[in-house]
Amino acid sequence: MSRYSTFLVLFLLFIFEGTVFQILAPDQYGVELLFIPRWVFMVIIFIGIFRGRGTGMFYGIVFGVMYDVIHTSILGVYAFGMGFIAYLLSISIPFFQRNLLATVLTAIVAAAALDYYVYGMMYLLGVTSIQHPEFLYSRFLPSLAMNFSIIAVFAIPLRKWIRYVIRRGEEEEKL
Image 1 (cartoon, rainbow, N blue to C red):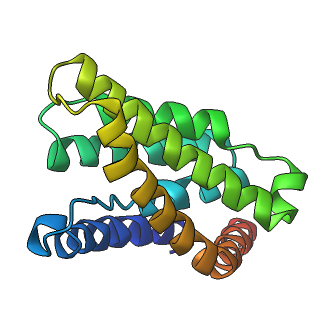
Image 2: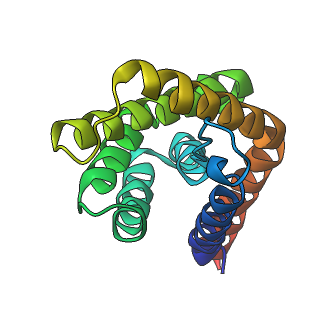
């Protein structure tokens, strides 16, 4: 069961993230800032740090495809970006596993890299015409602040849950 709990939690978070994005849509409230949640991706980075690069890349590609299908008109942008960034930043060494601040900062750097990568690809492919200053001030910085706030609040329970899933998986393998 623990084998499937990670995917199930990520999938439910993916659905919740899309729902929250619709609620926080700025045009409903007359605000020009856009808050883009990257919670699934930050959890994938946590999982990659604790379970290894292959696991992080796998979940990055799987959920990247889901983002491509649901949120964009171009397939492959999120799948490649999430998989590649998760592979690069899933630094599975004891320092990152023990140091919660390093893990949180790695997840934030990953979310920032993903945002810039997606913006760059969409700009390069002509899907968006938003200039960099507008992207930076109306989307990137507000999203970064929101994502940092969320991961800072949930980092300790997230780490405990991942360690629990790893322990349960090891116990199930022994049986």
